[in-house]
Image 1 (spheres, helix red, strand yellow):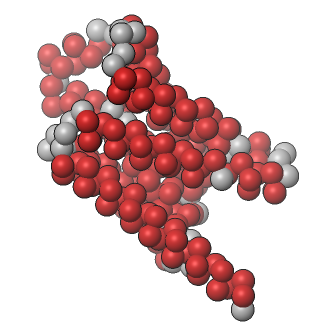
Image 2 (cartoon, helix red, strand yellow; image 1 turned 180 degrees about the horizontal axis):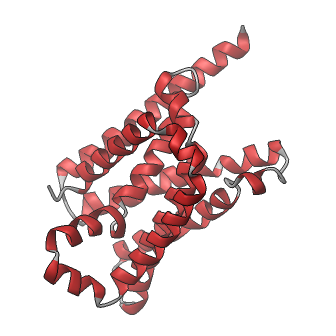
Image 3 (tube, one colour; image 1 turned 135 degrees about the vertical axis):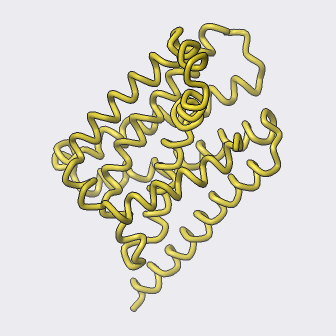
Length: 229
């Protein structure tokens, strides 16, 4: 279906399934997967900002529509970020959390690269049509601000960079992720509350981020109990 909220949930479930079945493959072939994500980045930008989009729609409408939803509109990279969010919220004591945490670095890098294509495409679109409505301006601001915060997180996710940073500095920097998650939620909320006007998509967004918040609070209390023992 053409429901962004359901696309997000289904994409996140697909990512979880792949991570659960192939964690060793993802770790072993991380360099190849990073290279693929960069190729996809350029592919998405070229597709969305050139005549390639119209040619594909004319000849392969279904394929073009799927590519559009997953990559151009950012369903897949947002889903990857959702999985990274839940990895931290579940923690290593949970069987699924342990599996997700084992590839969190790889997912963070791939998600950061792919979400970059989504931000570039829509930013160029807004530049081409600078007469922005206040809501569109808010969407652009939340996207650009969140990506400005994603960039240092992306750069310091690479092992080679991470080794050069003091552990306490790196940990402090990772707290930016919570601001990114909030801005992602706000961005999605604005789209589904005021543009698509879909109650189903709005409920899906609140369900995903509400569940994350509940798990994060639960983990926080669990960590406090462990510290007190």
